[in-house]
Amino acid sequence: MIVAQQKPLEEIIGMLIPYDRILILGCGTCVTVCNVGGEREVSLLHSSLRLAQSRGLAQGKVFSEYTVKRQCDKEFLAILEEKAREQDAVLSLACGVGVQVVADYLPDLAVLPGVNTVFMGAFSEAGTWDERCAACGDCRLAATAGVCPITRCSKGILNGPCGGAKNGKCEADRSQDCAWILIYRRLEAKGELDRMRRYYPPRNFRTTSRPRRIQGR
Amino acid sequence: MAISAFEEKLNSGKFVVTAEIGPPKGTDVSEMVKHIRLLKDRVDAMNVTDHQSSVMRFPSIGGCLLIKELGGEPILQMTTRDRNRIALQAELLFAYSRGIRNVLCLTGDAIDIGDHKEAKPVFDLDSVQLIRMVRTMEGGKDMAGNDLKGGVEFYVGASCNPGCDFIEPQLLKFEKKVMAGARFFQTQGVYDLSSFRRFMQYARQFDVKILAGIIVLFSYRMAIYMNENVPGVFVPEEVLEELKGLTGPEALKAGIAIAARTIRALKEEGLCDGVHLMAIGREHTIPEILEISGL
Image 1 (cartoon, each protein chain N blue to C red):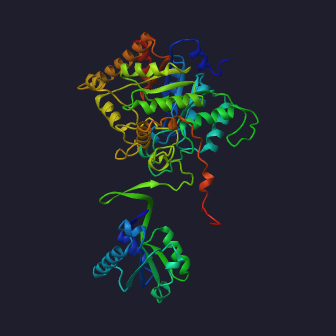
Image 2 (cartoon, chains in turn cyan, yellow; image 1 turned 45 degrees about the vertical axis):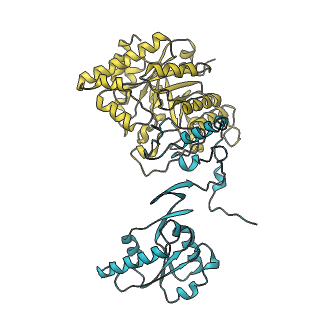
Image 3 (cartoon, chains in turn green, yellow; image 1 turned 60 degrees about the vertical axis):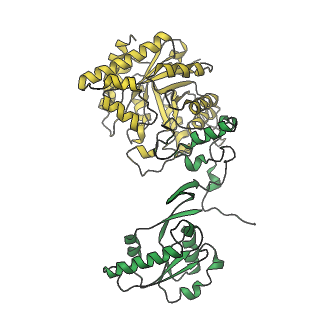
């Protein structure tokens, strides 16, 4: 799923300075699962902003809250005709996709990001999320025993490990496993090391020329 | 026909010595020039590092041109960390046009360990792909398949890490580098001869020249620091013990003795084709190390 992190409260308050009536808008999909932008977090942020007001910050602003099923899908945004009426700004707690779809939908309003979208990843353990996919557009997981070298190797290299790992950990971040050592061990266990012996040519970055679009489906 | 004087030396069967030159941070090249002058007749070729440890410095190509001007034999170090395939190819065209004939192809250290941690890591290619890139250009074409007006020819090298704590994936990659067209290897620092011997038993099945890396140690603290912070460096416990308790000139003397002893053992056993000395800022110690080791 898409994993995000809430922006610091000071930054959010700074963004809101020009606006008086603000709708805090949650999203019921990815950011709900990663505990950053769902109904619960909308309510928590609302309380934090009210608390800030009691400390003399964000004076004179009126907040309201609502959470849609998915901000990245126009179909779920019709309700905003009513909810965003008479608002100056929408503070979206969705990923960057959701923020942009809402901004397109409400062209007369300021639509502001309340979170930083950080990666596509998975839940590992309580409070921990790990990046797993870089959306490179050319999936090679079949050749790497289900470990993505583009995402999980800090250098994103394709032909095996650099010489920098120690104790199986990456030279860039000793808390992270070396992806290529993981790949080697898994391929070895499966008797598929030939997959790693093959030469992989340089990536075609045209598959990721931006912005990407899929049509006719 | 050898492509470079360095290749010719290796082909002659001589026990070859190369040394690493670290360029300055800034434009004052006087110390680098001093090191080049000191070493150009004592070693067979000199590598110039390419923003080693991801620390921004005077470029490898600049150092290599200085070596040429001063009458030495340069080895251009090239990492894929800071340049995409367009910049890498262009730099090789320039290097060739100015008489540089040796290139060491590396992936490069992670940006995170250097002094510009917020820079964009490029890694458009990896080291194996970089070696192939040079080979492609030697065929008269660029990577996009366009004809080159005036080609290139290089003696292509690569690196490997025989002292790594998990050697099998390193050997697999070593073989990929050979298959891609690497003709010589300059290894990471070698301290433990028994693991290097095992590596050489494997490496000797390939028709490539191997120079064992010698990183000169100057103190116990430096060795500990390298073990903890420098990617790919593994100084074993016995060597640490030798340096423990020594300071200043005594520690330096011990470091020089360790390097010289390793070089002598490698040469006497005929384990490899030469050595590559990395003195990390203390290039002035190299003549003494070579003298003690009998080279």
